[in-house]
Length: 138
Image (cartoon, rainbow, N blue to C red):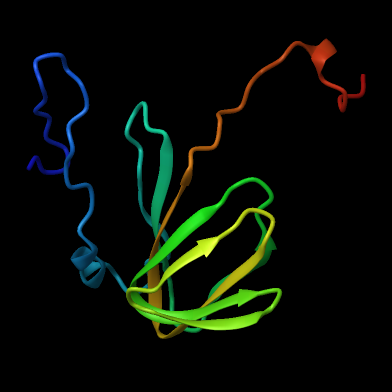
């Protein structure tokens, strides 16, 4: 297997599977580190993925994601999933489906929480002619 940052591929130069991140590295990070600690940035990818770290007793406010289904895997720590139906405890290894249109929020437990999210890649911003935009005022 090829390590992160190394390139070795087939003769045609196509993509090669490789290790991108080791969750064991989370323990080596400064405890104050929060937010996305890793992002999938491979060219030509069809999905987006992030490893996100939330400090103890902090969280992500409940919100609605209108467009994307998201898979969330807790890789370290524990916390609580907040939904419109109530709360659900999460522990290391919890795999959660967050369907588009649903209300979701997260609260980290006493040890904090780190999780992996995976979802369809958002399309990039498209620049259109001014005549195609309905919301712009002269």
